[in-house]
Amino acid sequence: MYILQESLFSFEELQKLESKEKLPIFFSSLDLRPYAKQLRSSSPRGADGHSREGILRALIAAPLEGIDTFTALHHRLDKDLRFRYQCGLSIDRPAPSISTLSRVFAALTKKKLAEKIFLDLVQLAQEEGIIDGSHQAIDSAAIDAYEKKQPKKRSEQTGNANWGAKYDSFGNKITWFGYKMHLSVDTASELPIAIKVTPAHVNDGEVAPELIEQVAERTKSKIEFLIMDGGYDQLKNYESAKNIGAQAIIPLNLRNEKEPPEGISSNGTPRCSMGYEMTYWGADKDQLKFRCPHATGKVDCPLGMAACSSSNYGMVVKVDIKKDVRRYSNPHRDTKRWKELYNERTSVERCNSRMKSYLTANSLHVWGIEKVKTHIYLNAIVLLVSALAMAKENKGKKAA
Image (cartoon, rainbow, N blue to C red; front, side):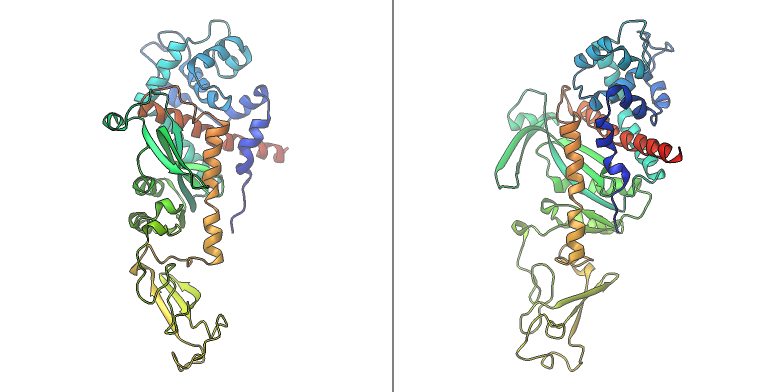
């Protein structure tokens, strides 16, 4: 049974604190020295004399503080000496310039260091028991571009921002020019395990197999369930989940639906000879068991049980999930357990919301998909560090 962990509320807890209290706690679980070494020039402290570790701290603190431009970050470092000191930058000399901050961000992007920090933090969060990973939810979120809008055909040639479209919960079509942030999120902690950024026009279902492959490599525990909405109802996503020993929990998308096989309802339930849906009676590994609905009291069949079986137990039908991994699942569709699992999908929606509404994932001021990836990873790093920091803080309070 899934219990919401303390880390679920860690980000909100941290947000309630003032910056002077928040940043020391936040940085207490973040050792950036190994990564800062890779950002240094031939000079021990860089040509401009600023600590690369301090600048890296500032770039990571920026989303936490709602700072979304290099200009705003320079201004904060220049005017707020406490903030500059907490980032590990010298207070007896001018703050790093806008161009210096931009150059370090570009170096982060070129060396893919933000992604490396993210992956190391995911591993640490698993070691600390904050991320479980056995249940994961996958979804995407729209990210508006900073680039100038272009015609779709021209955008497709660049591989950067493009036009995307989706329907909201009211059936209204929404379009945007930008990117998609695809996440696989641990449903217990609501923390991201894998991220992929694509132009906005890329279909969610096309990205899921790659995300599933990534989480299989990164998750220490066995992945049991991968939960997605109906937009991912494509055979390859069920097969990708099956290939790593997991069950995909995806509602059937009626727009993709063909006529079910004869004698089978659309949700994969066998029908008896009278046309009634049989009663699901549990599973044994890949075998789903169904019983006569009259025998189980679900219907009052005019022929009773005798027409189908001489047994007092009633007719039994077993279905092998591997026969059609899209239509059949364990647990069976429409059962209470299947619905409980599908409800865990809200974890990825909340993660998306935190990154877009409370951090700066949807406040882009950089061009090109590679820099956008760095920006998104920095936001995800904030969530992971917040969870690690608050877990450490809570342990310290309990010990005291």
